[in-house]
Image (cartoon, rainbow, N blue to C red):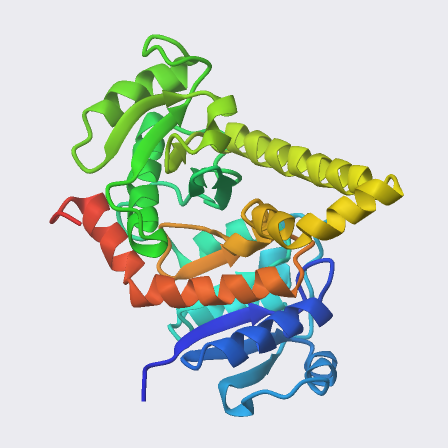
Length: 338
């Protein structure tokens, strides 16, 4: 029998918990037979939700957690005080190696704090970055960092580039991924103090395929596979892309439904349009891993629906099968080539 990939799923986190979280879990279980899920949350609530579905009950276990960390709570205080919360219990299951991974749509702050305080960093990793996959014209790219380190040092960004390269090579399947640093121009001498100091370090780093600077407008074109920046810049890029994407989709839908003629046209192109729009749907890429920890912690959108939860759980399988943490350890310590 194949070894199970064991995931602690925060059943209480997110705007659509527990209904969409549990639905995503069931969809993932039914698609992958090497997945084992610990659904962590208020036992009665979770079990009531599970009654709606048919699934292999030998691969899903409910772990009772009486408390829930709300998004409005100060994360450090919440992690310290709510020991019986779904996030803290799930974090501890990763820490003690009961689980390989944690998936949560809950409080971003609590997940970032818990990841570092409870799960802990890989030796040599200065700061774990939050690294979502984003859609581009040439497929997925990783935006690293987008939320964990608002004030970064050049050495942090070099490690981000290394970890992002490992992820793109072994999880996404891009050989020799192209790395670029976000800048306000293509010239090496441009940028703020952080970018100017980091640029030559990336340029002289033998572990990555550094191609130079990338302007924000060129990110969606797919010119680079690993987009390196501090979390303040990365979060602004991510939220802008999500906002523009939503406006474009709403505008297209509105135009197609504006008259009888456009409705007929929409019907004719429906299947092609749906397939084209799918590549720009962030839920297709799963969640954002917090890389560089002693176990995988993945944050999904607070508004995640079942499809994003399902894809994130499947993402955890690939992470484990490809031994991503071991490869990150190797590239951070430079003990051997990855």
